[in-house]
View 1 (spheres, each protein chain N blue to C red):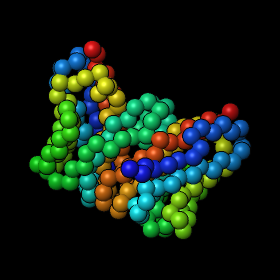
View 2: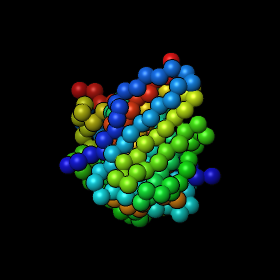
View 3: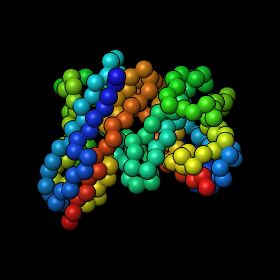
View 4: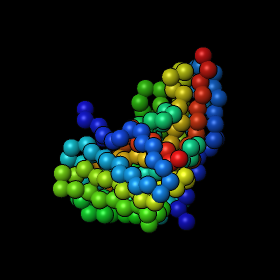
Length: 108
Length: 112
């Protein structure tokens, strides 16, 4: 069965303390892996698309990487405004399957 | 830039009533998805449309139906509402089936 697993479930960081979030997947026919940021009560906001192993994408303090079985979202020197739930999703059979997310809290 | 527009933003219905949620995708996007997100849960795929035809179906109850119209807007119809249907419902659209999806701000449905 196709699965997307994110870890850790929650992450509490001090401002400036870099860390990484993990997304591991077991899907057949992967068409793409996506990272989203979601604030409470809001719709997921698109961050990155990764299609092949070895690919990397960067945006401000965020960097996403992809291997054959997992993806990492690295947060460098986070700020309080980076606090959110980060969702990983894989595309297969023309639909997105989401992981449970990692809730990141950055304290000033 | 234009975003996905959903209406209404909030909806309160009683048990056994019917609800209709609307979604207006980003112009020239040919794929529309519907997701349900319960409190503290990840979004669950309900149904998708590609070029106005139903493309994939997820864990959508038989009480729910959806369609996409000629102007590409989509509607999710929910009948015989149950308390467990209370959730955030998101619509997303994509330029094609192989690229990223952009989500609307959602409709919060509360069934009382």
